[in-house]
Image (cartoon, rainbow, N blue to C red; front, side):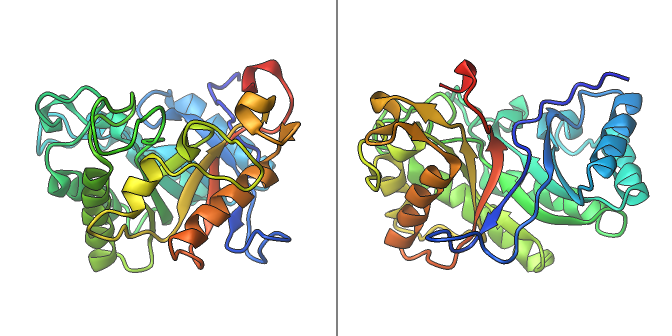
Amino acid sequence: MKTKIAVYLIGILILSSFKVALADDFFFTVNTGNTAGASTDAELATTFQMLSDLGCTQTKWSFGWQHIEDPRGVYDWTKTDYIATLAQQYNMSIILFSPQVSVPKWALKEGQTANVPRNPGEYANFIYQVLNRYKGSMTIQYVEIFNEIAHGTTDGVNPPFGPHWDDTAAYAVEVGNTIYDKVHDNFPDVKVGPMSLTQPHGLGSGMTAENDVKPTFMSAYFSATTKPKMDFLSIHNYPHYGPTQTGSFTYATQYNMMELYRDLLDSYGYNDTPLLITEGAIGTSSWVN
């Protein structure tokens, strides 16, 4: 059966020290692109069978808030219950992905256009509800939120903001920290990544030199009055050609980009925070340029 899987990356790498070599603790898996509420049961079953055949032990799934809690306080677990059944059947751990693009209309901040939640506590409660429901039936080791919020932003302080986050970097920290605290207070073993970055926008206006990270949105994010809390930083890397995208690189590889992000985290004191590639591409096809 032909499934609707968008494979963004052959593997997810946990890279806690990427200066010279891969970390000792890393794993490869497949990121399935469809949201949990958008595939048929047959497609989901085939997906898990394929993941198992590939030898995967982890997979990233999107738990769309708008598909599960709409209206407020009314939950539909039909599709995610089936995912839990399949995860048990195939002994698969789940990376819970709940991006801001899935915030339901009732939970949106008034006047915002890029799916900004009105109340950090409501967002945190949704994540809690998912983890609490499946704490005995599905292994969830990682939670990733905020899809590419630095994409296309200016400085993270003054409008206009970017297409993926129509608010300040400081508010992103507030929301992320609220979710981090809620998860760790109730599920201390679950690791939380409060945001994901893509390039070149997540690095600023572009990669202008091999080790140069332009601190636009990220400077505002890491310099916020309240220090961002994170167990890992999610990276969505797509290799690029050409000086406008890669600076001194002829071809910017995953390794080149990870070095840039490693330097970024280290410069803000997050030396022991791992980088996880949870979306991206490997190859030289024109669509990644």
